[in-house]
Image (cartoon, rainbow, N blue to C red):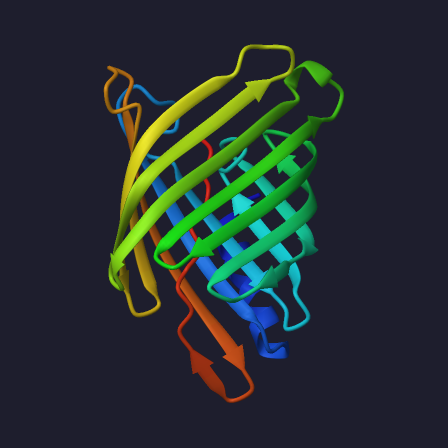
Length: 220
């Protein structure tokens, strides 16, 4: 996988030419001397068709030097209380090889937002390397350009104790751009930080309109 970032961008560009849909690109960088993901950059691309079919491509997400691709369908409703559920199936290649089942979920009530991205990954040839991972966030948006709240990562390898990493988060929105900042295990020596950058847009015929970016997950 020589140019995974270019492949992810190409997938989204090709889809945008032929569809009336929603697209987003995100990139996350890890900071912290004690995390193995230090200096790792993880790009993620999302695509949702007008009929709510969904695709997601990731690199350095499940593991460094691993490319993954997921497909599913979104079930959503927008109102005072809005929700979105996207069950997915996917596969990985690179340092990790296998298949996965995933679920993206988002709930909105007035200025509150809860989002979660979870998956169960099944590795080829060695069941002991199977794992469950989820990233959840609860945030409040007092103004249109700022939000903040709590975040948590939950990782459990096959037949091992769960690793739970709580954190705090703040984010800034500038038109279609979003800049989220995370600090995980802030009270411990092995604390680490994540800096994100996201861009999301909708294409509907000849009109483009802003859509606030969803909060994404990332595995260390």
